[in-house]
Image 1 (cartoon, rainbow, N blue to C red):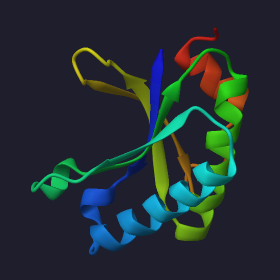
Image 2 (tube, helix red, strand yellow):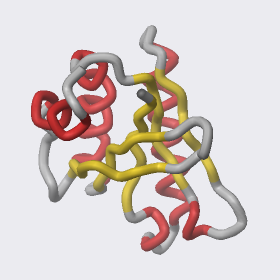
Image 3 (cartoon, helix red, strand yellow):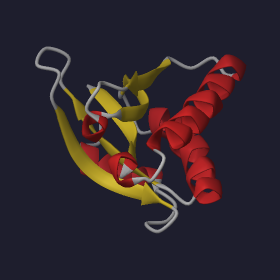
Length: 120
């Protein structure tokens, strides 16, 4: 099952390009220092309402959630932002939001998130 963790509320930001650029740079630096099968999501079409920046990865067991959730939560606290976690259908390209975490929502509990996603 493919999951995504995307920056939430990017379209509502006064300067979404700056926020997206900062997150993209942080993710690229993090991924360069880790050996994880996680890919950057950086979709910025003309319509700023459709911008998506974050990561996606294959979810096999709850242990695969720890590294991305820990890294993104640290970034969310510093940047005062929120993230959304959800399912990604590779065939249709559709995304289904499942839960949120971040500056206001708080630290994600890996076991709780795994329960929401369906514990494999």
